[in-house]
Image (cartoon, rainbow, N blue to C red; front, side):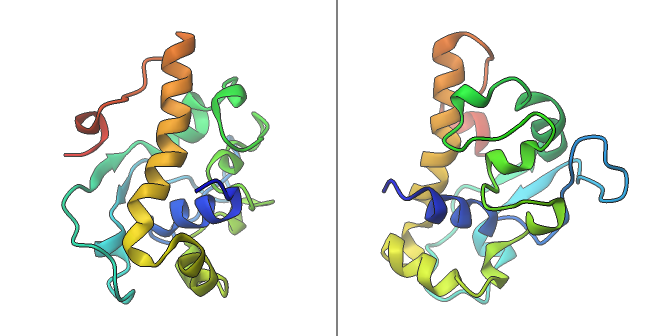
Length: 152
């Protein structure tokens, strides 16, 4: 699966519709941590696979404020250090646009493009692991690259 728009729509689907922000923008707070769990956060979506490995305590603020800065080369999506939200929420132009895609009018199209809700985890893996593996290979960071590094 190599459709960046679809990949990002799925990535933001797992989080609640909590607002994100530009680093340093006090008007829209960036949550410290998030529970990445599509099934728990979006029980209204029929056909999601049974949740066996959530990502509890995802360091959302540290990703936005620290981990992503200066590491654009590792991401699937272009972004600027002044708006790191776009590294994962690549269609967002403002902090307010970086929310959950399951409330988006394109959610049905996104699920159809990936082969249904049961394929969601494959897309998360591609987006997250692409960046983590590229950073680890370059020695620029020590992000988790094994399942247990994120899943608990």
